[in-house]
Length: 558
Image (cartoon, rainbow, N blue to C red; front, side):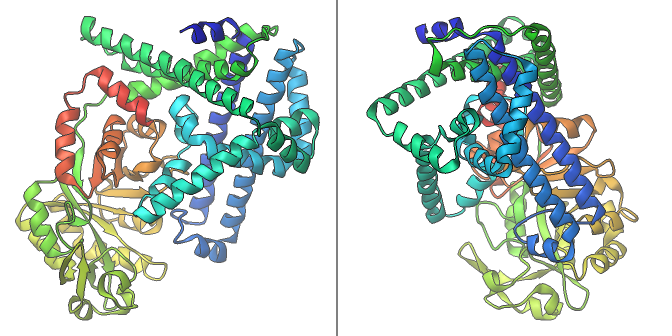
């Protein structure tokens, strides 16, 4: 506690105002990037950006590819500029020579001097330290940076990549710490990149540096989480004394403000012997920034916590705990017994314009042959033996799968797996053949491809159509009823905005208990998982969370 009070003693309004301003600029920047991404993708009818279609985008949509490259460069430049503002502004506060005009003028000069090089260096720093920033500083704009979550999900797919990824990250983190002086030297001393690397490496090689580093890290952790625990304690007291009043949104907003306060305090830890002065004109600006930050966070929390935890349960690819080959009739029969609200499954169009239940666009993994579903007829596909999860069976045609589901009153969430060659035909044929069945039995459709989604809207009600988004790069569209979002890219803001617009948000595919709790705490409408039996248990427990417990879940995972 002595550490905390000592830090408060040296913490003044100037650095807090800087942190608030940087947070707001970054938040606005991310929002504008999403608007630009949405504009690009819609104009070129490109549904999404992923590892599987990046080559196709470059070849067939060079305008989109160029625009996205420009957007990425601008993002790096913005990140570098904000880092420059922080470094120069803090130095000016220490030397009691703070001036807003001078701050922005010098920061722009540095931006013009180093431009993309500085952006790349800052981007590497942000990528490396983002997990710690997420854990320590719960600010509105940090909650929207989900890149590390996507990387973590990607490397966690098997034990080898998980161990390898962790080792690589530890190495990256070590070098980032050793080179943490590079940016300050470039910004404040006008040093070149090579000399900055050399000076930083030499400065951080002593035992005294590492002793101070670990001590500062402990202080930052104690200061940051002491504040969070105080806010949680307030919620516990509110649950006890004022159970009829919902104070969750207020405390959620306090988390955001405390994240920024603790960030400012943490910066001052390296200079506790210096008293930072208050720059003139700060108080009015600070009040305005606090009001904006609190309002944004409060509005997000108000929407998030306005809904009970009772999501729709959806069995991913028709299996539960690897109880069969995904997307087959045998696994459907087993999974129905767990009573999911929906069973999610995938449909491809065959060579003879019929439909097979299958996820992958290549049969190599399941059937051991190098072929695509659209290269074979339905009869040829149904003869194939497919193996997965230590089970073997035959592929199932969609008509048989749909008939069995209808007979057992099991609703389906049907993903349409289109290709660039058959997207239009797929949508038209599928809608003509199945729209009455889908409406009558309350099935849902979703797809990664925006083009067939728009075609299907002519025949199938909007309430039965959902749009899948692997990465949260765009803003919600007015003509989309529901979104399916990869759980690692979910953010409280995205869920809240869609809730406010009366749009539904499904998330896929949280399979661990921690990932499921994350989705539950954010109040999504539906959860697609490979472990629907565990999801049922998690929902029952979450429905008995106190407000304080729910706030803790959001704190841990947002």
